Length: 192
Image (cartoon, rainbow, N blue to C red; front, side, top):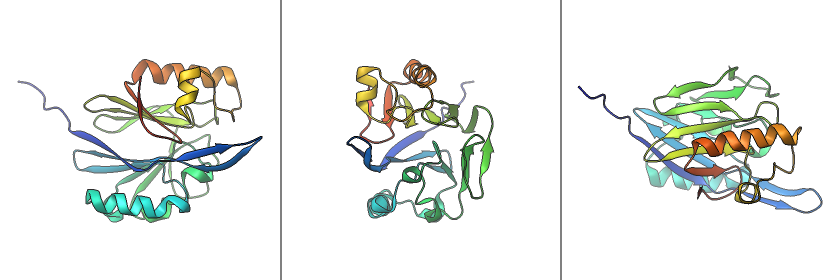
């Protein structure tokens, strides 16, 4: 007998952006919805600025905020988690290394949170950065700021903000080994 494949789908709720000058001038993270066998997971809830876009996307998809079971924070910077309160019933997952004030599951090791959905430690931007590896019709990596922009992948450079460039590059290589499609922290998905 063959084991039934788990159906996994991804939808972008809001496409993030990043404006740099001599420092970061403006940042809004990309927010992604994963739907798998009876579970709805939002990865990064972005900023208040993108809340209207997220609400519109959820409505078009037919998922209510109360239907979201889990929120995964790729890290605890404000531009990735300002709308966590939209998903009041969701269990929030954040790496133990992150400084997050709120009710959350502290993730200490790589783990599956649903069939085909794995949380993977990808430090470099922050000590507790993690990506979400999704096995769907392709292999997706939702990277947060481990790969903030497609340009980081194309030029093979670490995020502009990092605590250790070598660690950041190891995380980028780990992501590239897994993924066929990358959903960066601040932009549109792209194939590799």
